[in-house]
Image (cartoon, rainbow, N blue to C red; front, side, top):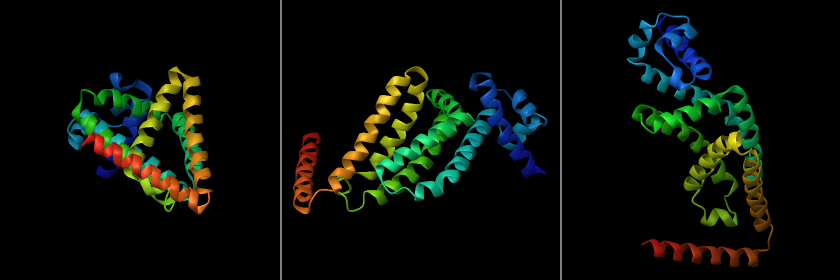
Length: 216
């Protein structure tokens, strides 16, 4: 019964968060959504904030698991961008982006939400980094790309695009098109001859070394 109660509280929290927003969330409406006594929130989680954090992390883990097989099938940057579009549409319809946006806003002043949001985002970043390691292996970009940093950048842009879409749909479309062009560029580079690719690798490495020297 205890595990069942915890599950109901975690699921009820996400339902309440979607319906009420983080500003309107309370032990009472979480308990109502879960169909349990609100005292059980404090018995199992200690506080509403800790319950919100646990619910958000579990929800993200479920989302990542749902897409893991599709991530494993990605074979190019363009395919990754295509999957990103599908993921965005599905997660928006499910209300998960609304939840994430509220947690990101609350994280600015709440260390519990900040830590949870960071951990939740890292779940996505790990999946994206694995895709990048695979699709860039042996490519011109793969020789110089910091895939861990690029995975963070793509995750940040993914979230930023979704938030932008609410207020600036045209800007969102332009940004998505720009990411598509990067995928096309990567394919064109890998389609070059051996001599041309060697020259590009050398030029990119020299530029990277200059950048590192300038920062030190």
